[in-house]
Figure (cartoon, rainbow, N blue to C red):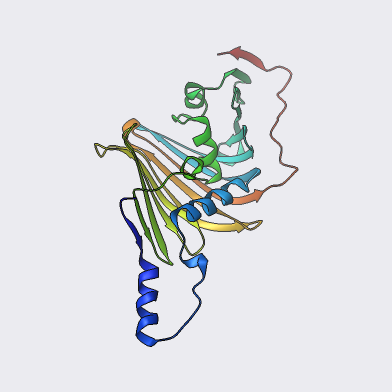
Length: 259
């Protein structure tokens, strides 16, 4: 590990040495990077179903789309998004699974279906996202599963703030995470290239606790290379509700088109 800086440990050690006192230091306050990442990933995995209502703002080049949405997610492989316009007019219903997607244009009563890939997500939501990143974007999660057995290249820890950095020399990618170590939530992430190009920049704000799980009500993501951005603001959230509904029925006069 290139640089491991346990700031809190050093500060507390100095204070204890100075006053001659002997106090037990909580293990929760001095975490190794492995334990910190494990705690964050465990929190993400507690979410089995996710339902929420709010707004979404998508910028793609010079175009901007803003709508009210209702989101229902059943992990690991189903995302339903209902899109509404002014005065609660239903515009679209979208069901995306790992294998297939169904996009219903409520205005024209036309449904599009096909295999799920980034082109399908682009058509449905007007933004380029891999399927797993789509689920994480809507749930406010950060997938750290591939970091569980990886030592970081840089780690700064104190009782308020942590910074973790991973460099993948094979792919040339750099992953950086800013973490609130008071409540073990992610504040910011940045995924970039070794040539300093940013692939994804995301911030997570306004955390609320639902079923002992901290969820950000505001998620902002930027994709500089594609000149795209996404912001989600939730007003209502429900976690692990067994009544969460993923499927929907379409009117009998719906016209279908295979893509």
